[in-house]
Amino acid sequence: MGRYVLRRALWFLPLTWAAVTLLFVAFHVMPADPVDLMGGSRGVTPQVRANIESRLGLDQPVHVQYGRYMARLAQGDLGESFRSGRSVGSILAQTAPASVRLAFWAVTIQVVLGLAAGVLSAVKRKSWADSLVTVSTTLLLAVPVFVLGYLLIYTFSVTPAQRGFPDWARLPAEGIRPDRWLGVIPLGGQWRSLVLPAVTLGAVNAALLARVARGAMLDALLGDYIRTAEALGVPRRRIILHHALRNAMLPVLTLVGLSLADLIGAAVITETIFNWPGIGSTVARAVLDLDAPVVLGLSIVLVVTYLAVNLVVDVGYALLDPRARHQDGD
Image (cartoon, rainbow, N blue to C red):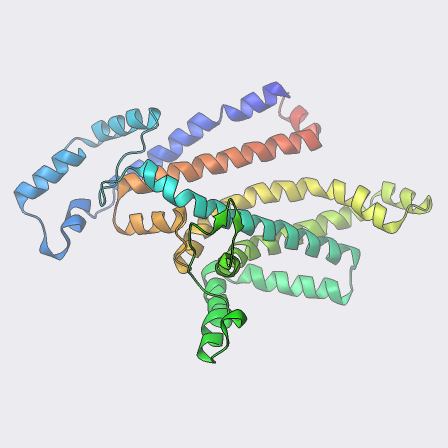
């Protein structure tokens, strides 16, 4: 098991290097010039341009800029924003808590709703509950995340406000306060600002998880050991929770890990829609500003987070099913 974990962990470095290099190259082949954007409509004089490029190192050949960036990155220095001059590390420290809180509640919604709907649909196969889960998950999977976000805003925030509903009967589309949290727990009325973005971010993956959980549960319920347990008189609830659900968790666990890639991408859109002050909305603004250090630094954090989660999923899968380790040569 130790060699399996070490082998998986060693993939961190080449994958991270490849991601950083691709992002770095992507920014340097873009036709736009960050110095022109800094100058805005007034533009910049040749002397000012030369000074800015010299200060930021943009007057150096691309391979020199790449080497310097990788050297700073190896020391844990993510660089400084072209726009504000702030270190990317301080921007990360300011925005990461908001993203972690939103991701925590989105994954909670995804797992709780998706698993419950999938199990219910499989256990109540060909019932109205099964049909309801099938139709609702199909609709959710067909709707883009930004459309779902705006629909929720219109339904639970804009329309109630237009009709003069009291505050308790409507949900705000923004208004998060960083000082009203205890870790990931919202305090006071902050949960009202959390509901819409967390549901938007978690709903799509919850629908996918429900589909996978339903299929896995149906396969498990048709197993010989389930029929044996039923013949022995084991209670139906115990068969579902202690036998079928345990075996159905392997594909569910894998999907939860893989869906984090969608979660990271959807977080950029969701945070932007709801003006959520997290990493995703900061990256989106930095892309528009061509603020390469911010985009590169925060994207590296997202990539490393994604790789770390996948490592945890792989290890968890190997613990639940030793065949995965043997197939990998361990």
